[in-house]
Image (cartoon, rainbow, N blue to C red):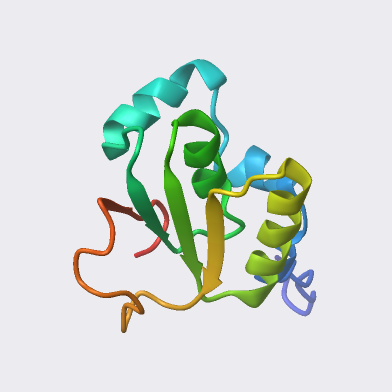
Length: 124
């Protein structure tokens, strides 16, 4: 950038969560044929009670719930805007075996051993 020139304002991070199209395109682009490999990678199996820490809009939580039989999934997310969008998507998809909840990883708001599997894909 030339001296004296002002930089263009960056798009706020929160606007990233304004639609599932951006989520699919930028954050969790996947190919449907790889879903079984993803389930194997995270260790998810039918009948499990699963926690996703830092779920964002709940993309992985919803994918787990749609893919595996008899699972119960809880998505934990500190960002209210992400959760609001996630709740809209859950309602649209009519998924009843997923609960998205406001909260952070520390302190964990669940008792020890409350879940069969805990996963976190994008939390550092």
